[in-house]
Length: 111
Image (cartoon, rainbow, N blue to C red; front, side):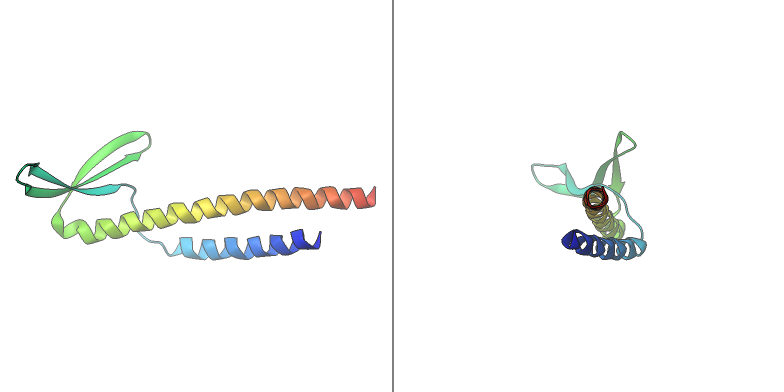
């Protein structure tokens, strides 16, 4: 029971750190940025394309060269957001299981 209580405290701290990181992420957008060519054989006429799916719709947008740094940062922010929220959900699942385990152990000690 002591280990479960200690682990719950660790989970709580980790979730709080995740919340702090999420609060400062900034602009984000999903997608994959690729370089395309108007003429593939000679690799001339390069341009950039952002492909993503949002609300069950697949989309493709052209990205101006001067916007590349912003778009790359936004994509990175989105990946960080997804990783953090996945961690949060994983920790919450573990937290719920530990709380249920503790409740069972406490009720068996009482009864």
